[in-house]
Image (cartoon, rainbow, N blue to C red):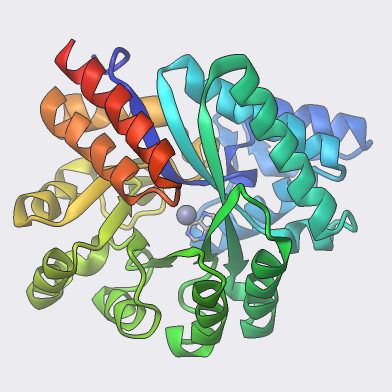
Length: 328
Ligand code: ADE
Ligand code: ZN
């Protein structure tokens, strides 16, 4: 049982956190039929490409700043309900632009949701702006430019998500240069759909402190050693990896081997309802399926907070809360 453990995550896409019930309510609000997106078990898709299409369709159900505030507050409230003290949410201004809302209103709504959730529950949250790789290099550069221009105190990191098979990391490196110059923390999706080369490219060209997923680094022992030496943190999302068939089952998932090799790892939910999971369930699986002890799980939560894109005072307060709970 992990319900009592304090939790933290640094990798969840805000639109990907939409519960099907909220998607249905949003569709009703805008008079849309989304029956093609849902089946009895939740969102309906069959492979990574279809997942991205389904994700973009769900994102298009949020059309105002208030819609985004509701989504953000709903998700953070759920997290706080099972003792999550910190969350980094990945947001994509492109989705705001695509729906005609605009990036500023999109971001303002998400910030309102964070403030409301913090007021009600005490949960701490920060925002990672992401570019979507499948929207092309120009759009990823525009996302980095936007993150820089926004000068929003809650925006503390930059990421690239989307179709990993599109182009090479080099095509997108400029976006990360912009984000680095702006003082943002850097993380990038790699080693999820593509193999170890994608993680190596990310390390060579982006120099991120964290990698989104990175779990296929296990295919190259020299790369695993490099990750250990660099201290790069892998934002591991086991349920997502099984749903997207990166590994056939939890037994063959690389989390255990990566941790045993000394790679810094933490637990995350990615797009929880799309993968029939939750951060709570990821912790439960780590405990009861993967066999991690409470101390090992607290260690991964500590890693998430150590790697968080957050000011040192907040990091210190979060770590103190975690340590106090772990020794209680
Ligand atoms: N966008 C949302 N979820 C994603 C994932 N798991 N990989 C890449 N891009 C994503
Ligand atoms: Zn992700």
